[in-house]
Every structure is written in structure tokens, then in C-alpha cells.
Amino acid sequence: MKRKANYWKKNYQLWFMLLPAVLYVFIFCYIPMYGMQLAFREYSFSAGITGGEFVGMKYFNQYFSSPMFLTTLKNTFVISAVSIIVGFPAPIILAMIINQIRNKKWKRTVQTTVYIPYFISVVVLVSMLTIMLANDSGVVGNFLKSIHLVAGNTNLLGSEKAFVPVYVLSGVWQSMGWNSIIYLAALSSVDTQLYDACKIDGANKWQTMWNIDFPAILPTVIILLIMNMGHILAVGFDKIYLMQNSLNLGASQVISTYVYSVGIKSSQFSFGAAVGLFNNIINFLFLLVTNHIAKRTTGNGLL
Image (tube, rainbow, N blue to C red; front, side):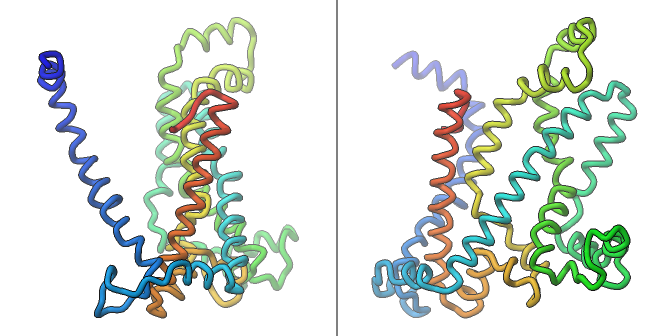
């Protein structure tokens, strides 16, 4: 008992520092879980969340039998998978390249330059894409046509084939620099004597990055990969909704936009809650599977 009292007396400042984060998670993450029952009830404004008739799996079956089920699931998975395949390695590579710059002034300049796009709002970013990819006057669109990468009459903003590349590449450009910060922080803990030893052994930059830098950030990479896999179906709503139009709807209609258009705009709140709950369950399963594989293969895991 005395040891426990001494422990609290010694560490109470740390627990007070942790308290705001715990309250935030409890208020904004755990309390809203109370509303999950809406997915299993017939919602009405008069009865509220808990007063509606219990309908069981009705709205889940409605979504699974909907012609949009496979379309939204496929589009969401494709966009998320391509974003992870292309976007996840990008900040890792960028961080290792920046870490190899020895001129401090030039290094700070590069870091500032790649961080700036992160502070551009999604609305501004989509507006930039609209201007640069315009069919007749867009700088990027005309350049791609001049090198015959796309056909002359292709509308990049209205093309189902172009939607995923435009969405992913613009996202990588915007977030790559900011996401590299955590890897640069991990690289800062590497003993500089290891780099001197590499120079003495005649290792080039690539060999130094592969044998020194990458092993140093591997635990961080594993943790962030697991967290990203836990959001495999959690594609951001705002950017996709702003880029969405009737021409690219076949590739841009994802679970989040479908929930908004059917569940919220059409006031089918129980249906929207069921689709959202299904989405969260799949994300959680991906998180568990990825964590299990990572633990078995590398010994590092999140749980």
C-alpha cells in the first residue's frame, strides 16, 4: 500500500498530463459508440435513437443486396490500396534523402519547401486541380497531351480512369513532406559514427540509406503501416466529394460519399449508420490481421 502511495505521489504530474487526452478519447470516441444501436433500429425523429423499433440486420442486408454495394466497396478499396502502395513509401524515401543532405541551410530549405503543401486546404487543392487539369487551358493537362500520355480530347477531371491517379498523386504531393517528419525524428537518433564508418568502408549513399537509415526507422514504419491498414476503407470524404462529378461517379462513389448521399441527404439515418458500422468493422479486422502478420514477421506490432 505504501509503495502504491509513493508511486502516485511520484508520478501524479504525468497522470495529470495524460488526463486531457483520456477525456478527449472518452468524450469524442467512446461516448458516440452509444449511437451504434441506430444501425439496428428504425429511426424516427419523435422516438430518438433508442426509441425506434428494433429491426436487426435489416439495413445491413439492404446494403449488401444493393447494386451499389460492390461498386462502393471496390472503389473504396482501390483508392485506399493505391494510396497506401504509392503514398506510404513516399515520405520514407523523402526522409532518407533529406537525412543525407549535410548542408544544414540547404536541408532546412528543402524541408520547408516540402512541408508547405500540407497547409493548403482541400478546397484550395481541388480548385488548383480544376485549373491545372482543365481540358482546354490546364497547364498539366496540356503538357500530358503534348507528350501523348493522354488523348487530346480526354477530360482528366471527368475520366473514371484518371480519377484514382489524380486523387492519389495530388494527395502524395500534399502530405508527403509532412508525413516525413516522424521518420526524420527517428533518423535523428541514429549514431553519427555509423555514417563515418560507412564512409570509411566506401559505402555509397544508397548503401548507407539501406543498411543504416532503413533499419533505424523500421519499427516506426511497421507501426504506421499497421495504423494505415486500419483505415483501409476510411477514404477521406471531403476531397473525393469535391472532385466527384457525374462523369467520374463510377470510380469516385465510395462508402463515405454513398453514406452521405443516401443516408444523410435522403434522411435514411439508420441505413447510413449500418453502412458506417460495416465500414468500421472491416477496418478493425484489417488492423488485427496486419498487426498479427507484422508481429509474426518482424516482431514489431501495435497491439
